[in-house]
Length: 248
Length: 248
Image (cartoon, rainbow over all chains, first blue to last red):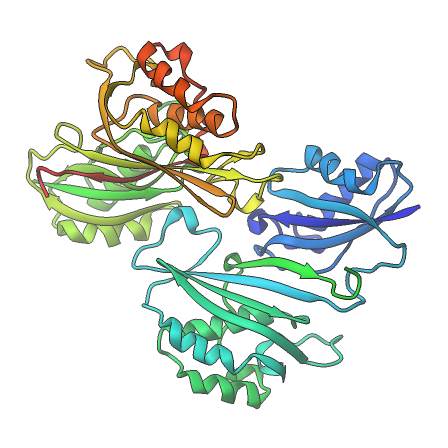
């Protein structure tokens, strides 16, 4: 038996997120089914990040155990032959049998894309959040700066019972404009449920002038979900990278 | 009665091109149906460019005649309320009754996008042509330079009987790389059937080393479709703009 790690990219448009559920098809389910066929044994992957319905990924991470004789680094090609074209394995390798994608230190990077123009662009609708009102990127960056560092992000998450602490550290939160696209890049040691989308939704309101940048500081201090902005829609969000500083 | 002009953008993924046909749904058909409902009279648009199945547009142009009392510039908003989200009108206005989108001088701009990396990216598969072998952009540009200017592009089109001449003028043909994307931008006074995709397919082969740049000069001079490269797939192509220098 060996443990194989996959770097998984996907277009989340047609999936009900990562995690297996009854309501519809998920990334996890497609991977399990494809691996089970390929390895001719029952396979169940363990994913690093359970992305929501409609969210995209360039580099989610998953592992599985198998007795297959296919070398770890070859799973990438074998799987891409069989997977639907909206899921692609970017890389695969063998890891120690106790390597777990969630129970260790990670640095996760997400991007959230706003499309800021007067009329939507159909060719970008699946990967951006369309915002009609002009957005002030400098104000958004000012507000973002209050969130960088170690804080209790209770105001910026959807409550879930199993969470032990709502303290997280954001290493980087930058906003850049290229033409009509505003890109929010956020990097941290982990994110609470819906945290990136609530930050994106809050900063969008700062950008359009509904909130002043300073109000975001108050929202953070309030530790009350009611004080922050709404969560931004899923299609603007992409899980870009998960790094494992202790094992790389 | 008045004539209204539309600037039409669309994601061509789910359409059988612009022109009405029996095999499947087209942009023209959706526009006619939506306008007929909106104006409560039978409407048939005339399009500037009959893009192929799977090809995208940011600025195709169409006109229609109507006795509706909706002002020309308001059709943009009225239509966007009713159209599916993969079609959006970017602008509308009233034009003289004899203004025709095809029978006058035009400058058309297209972009063709290659995705040049080892593994496909699912989030860009619908808008790029994936090329595995490393592409040399400088060689592609060298080859492209032979095509700029007025030439007989007989080697670079799929024959169609109704064409009077295969001479066209290319004003600009530039290739640029941004990360793993290579973007071909082409501007000219009109393009033959499949011309942009055949040029893209030929330059792709120059990029990967299958043709030398100089061979493209020979292909042009041969005036023989057999000599040039294959046509590149539709999803990499976007009709960016149609300009009317005589009426603007």
